[in-house]
Image (cartoon, rainbow, N blue to C red):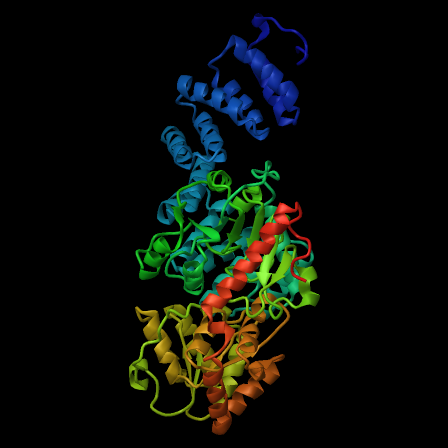
Length: 635
C-alpha cells in the first residue's frame, strides 16, 4: 500500500487509494486524508466520493469558502450523488442561507427519498422557519423508515405540542424515553407537556428525578419548564448553564470588538418574537411608545409572526425602525445589528418560544441585556446584564446570575396605563359564575398549576361553602383533568368555572371585578396576569419563594404597597386566603386599600417607569464607553 504522504503517480491513484483516504478520514486523520483527496481529485476531478469527503473535512473546519467551491462543482458534475447536495445544504445553512439550504436538501431528497439526514436537517430548517406542518411531515417520514429514530421522535413530539396535540406528544415522549431514558431534556419535556394539560401522573417522583439530574449536571430539563417544578435560584442557574453550554455557546467570532460609535442618540434594539398579541407586548407597549426620541433611537427586531392584531399595529408605529426578521438567519440578524451600530441590545425573550438567544452569541452590540420575557439567568458569558428589582433578585441572590444584576427602583415589571378597563362589568351570570358566594380566581396558564397548590385550592373550596374557583383554561384536556382532580379531592367539579376568551383586553380586565381574590400559583407566579388583577382592583394572594419566577407577584404587591398579601409558605398562603374568604370585613378592607394605593403607585406609572429604564440604558452605555460593561452598576 502506498504511504499517504509519499509522492504518487497518476497510475496508482485508483479506487484503493481513495478507500485508504476515506479510512484515514474515519480514523480522524483529516490532514493526511485531505492531502490524499486532493491528489486523487487532481487526477479524477469529478469523482463524487472524493469531492464529498473533502467537503466534509472543510465543513468540519468551518472553511466555508473552500467547501462551497468544492460542493458547487460537485453538485454540478455529479447531481445524482445525494450526499453532495446534503453537504451543500449544510454549508448553505451554516452561512445563513436558509432558503437555499432547504432547496438543496430538496434536491438531495429528489435523488434519495429515504435520505434520513436530509429529512432530519431540512425538517429542522422548516421548524426554525415556523413551517411546523411541513417540518412534522419530514420527521414523520423518518419514523416511517425507522420508528425508533430518536431525533425524529423528539422533534415530532415537540411539534405536536405546538399544534396542541398534547396526548399524542406525551405518548411520543414516553416512547422516546423507553428507547433512551437519558434523551436530552426528554424527562423535562414529558413533565412540562403533562403540566400543560394538568396531568400530574408521577409528578413528585418525576420532579425529583429532574432536579437530581440537573444537580448532577445532566440534561434532564430545559430551563423554562424547570421553573414550573423548582423554587431554587441556585438550581435555576445550574439548569440554564447546562442548556446554554449545549445549545447556545459563544459564536466563533465576535462582530463588535470594542469599536466606539459616534451617535447623537443611543441606539436601543429590542429583540423579540412577541411584538404582537402577547403578554410581553402588552407590558412593553407603553414603554416603547414613551421612549424619549430626542435621546434614544429605537429598533425592533421582530422574530415572530405578524398576527395582524391591534397590538401589532401599535408596534409598527412605536419604533424608529421596525425590522421583520422572522425569515432571516441568526448570523444575518446579528450582522444587521452590527451594521446598524446598535449601542444597547435587549433580549426580551430569553429561552422562551421562538427566541433567538444565539443572535447575542455573536456579540453584535457593546451592551447586551436580558429583560422581562424570561424570568431568570441565561447562564451565558455574552449577556452582560439582567434588569430586575430588589424583590425578584435580592442582593444576596446575585451570585445565582451570570449577568450583572441592574436594579430598577420599583418593580421590574412594566405596565401600560393607556389600557382603559371597560366601564361595563359583565354580570356574574354572563361570566358563568353563581349569583352568590366567594369567587376565587386564578387566570394563570395551566402549566403553572402544581398539584400541591391545587390541593390548597380544593381545601379552600371545602372550607368556604358556596365558593367557586374561576380558571382560564382553554384546553379541553386540562379542564377534564382539573375536574377529575377536584372530584378526587371530594369537590363537585361544577365548582370549577372556566372563563371563555374575550376579544378585547379591556373587557377581559373588566370581568376581574366579579372575583373576590386572585390566588397565585407557585413556584411559577402570575406575572402579567397578577399585574392585570391588581390594575382591576382584585387582591392577589401569593406565596413568595426563593427564585425569580416565584417572587414576581411579591414584587408587584410590595411596589403597590400591599405587602401583607405576601406569604412565605404554602400553609401561610392557605391561611391568608381562608381568612379573607371567611372574614368579609377583612376582604373589604384589603380591596379598599388596594383601590387607594393603585391611584398613586409607580406600578401603574408608565412614563416614570420608562424614564427609570432609560436611566439604566444610559448607565450601561456609559460603562461600555469606558471599556467595562459590568463595573459599578447594580449597586
